[in-house]
Length: 246
Ligand SMILES: NC(=O)c1ccc[n+]([C@@H]2O[C@H](COP(=O)([O-])OP(=O)(O)OC[C@H]3O[C@@H](n4cnc5c(N)ncnc54)[C@H](OP(=O)(O)O)[C@@H]3O)[C@@H](O)[C@H]2O)c1
Image 1 (cartoon, rainbow, N blue to C red):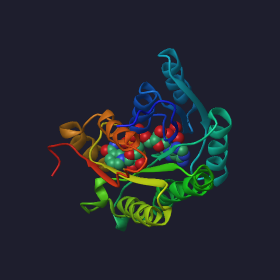
Image 2 (cartoon, rainbow, N blue to C red):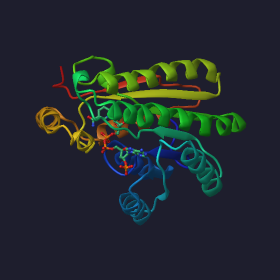
Image 3 (spheres, rainbow, N blue to C red):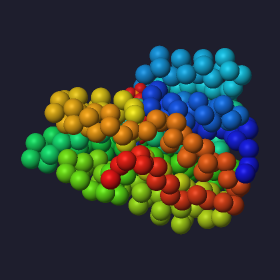
Image 4 (cartoon, rainbow, N blue to C red):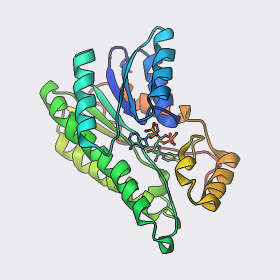
């Protein structure tokens, strides 16, 4: 197992949940982490925690729906830490609903954040990875794309689009770049806050979550496992769900 020490990692959506846990875990194992999201107060608090523990971290406000923000964060990581080894595209939202509700703006928002946000990350990091002759994309998708259920059609669609894109990217990447998709099941995070506009949906998801959700650290450990492998070992697909999830 290769050490994470010195690896430069960007984590999007690092202001809470899985992204925050991933930034903390990777930094704790010696990575230099750049945390990105919109809520700077949260990001700064996590950076302070990492630095207080002797780790290295920096933060930049970013909105993954803006291509220039991904370009900026990649340039920032390279300028600050000299290179970029890993881009963890984790930012995501899940304002799920029934198709009959025609919440078209929510559909668009999920496409913008969950799908286009990942593509903008690829566009920003790929030229740097090519130049370096090394690099690793880690894309956080979902078990909602593996077991399709009502209400989650558009959300699962964005996640499965990323799954498909990741496999094609892996095939084009050649023998130097790695591509990993991680599919979490129910994880105890703030994700259901993005369902607040449909209270009965949020209540249903929160009830399921209360019953079985696993801590975000479980996903962070899976991401660390993929990143820690030797350069010639590409972990393609990891599913991490609660044992109790059907
Ligand atoms: N929790 C689960 O059960 C579960 C299951 C499967 C997959 N996932 C996936 O895991 C990922 C992380 O979610 P989570 O569960 O940890 O939920 P979370 O706690 O709500 O975290 C979501 C993160 O995404 C960021 N984000 C949202 N919109 C953004 C934007 N436009 N630009 C930049 N950052 C944005 C949020 O930060 P700001 O609001 O500060 O920007 C936040 O840091 C998502 O892709 C989600 O789909 C979660």
